[in-house]
Image (cartoon, rainbow, N blue to C red):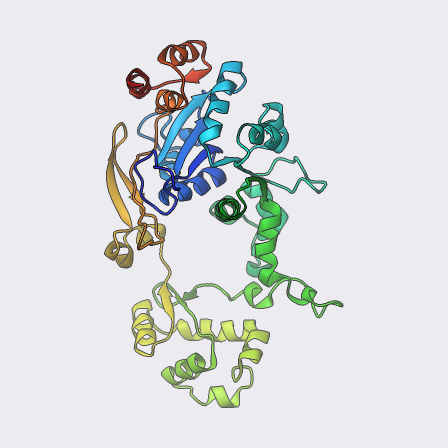
Length: 418
């Protein structure tokens, strides 16, 4: 039978409790997705808090913009796990948890006495998920892993240099962290489904490097798919130097002319219908893919002859794919996103009016909803420890010794009621 949710949510994961021992970006983003889907996510923080609490800009210290964005719908319990009482408090939370997820190195968890063996001894049905840099089975096991380092190892700066002819550079967002967060969500939901069938919890490792390599080589393994190879790695269509937004008379646009029907329509639109039949470089998908520099160069030359608005109108009239090249500011004010209410404002009890994104996946039978703002550090420590069975005197003692950090009076009220 499904448990009654503790966070008032009614989403598809309502009744699932997650102990979130992650920090910064990858782990908190994955648990934010779970929280948006209704899971009761308990964010376990040190007395210093998640480092992303210090991200600039912020309204109040400890409530940085990055933290606010990916820690909504969570409850914060602040414990010093190096103190026996702090660890005892965490162990008391484990029996009611369905999932424990962490993103430090496994040896660090073992030193805290929180290995899978330690945790499963307290709750044998726990789904114990480690999200870290590298598989424990290889020589990179235990190495630190950060987004920019992994981008370098995956060849992303090299691909940028190869494709653009410019200096190598990282993707201008945390690609590895944010992509890996999705793999963590998939792993957790899959393990929960497995448990519903077998009745057993399990340990799950989600190594970033290997998962991202899996995604990358989905297209860039290229000629090395074959043994012996039929060419080098790197999908040359994606590596073409002219595969970029096309410059118009007054800006840039992002058209996409791909299949035979689209090419016939495009060439007719620009007054060169005979080019499809007479120029073999354009007459078949195989030839166009084999010569991306020729195709992209031709498009680049033609697109320069009109304004962005003219091309947007012409492509739309001929049912050809095209999109604007947005800035982040443009995206913030995108009319389609406005139609669906994607950006919303809400009042935070300490940070004032905040803009937030809605959770985009739509569940028609079990819709999810935002029910909690991002928590202050230790805001729910007393509440959660009271739920775990600690008396108010015990909570006060842990707070006095620094084993637990409590903010507000929720825990006192709950403990008194109990």
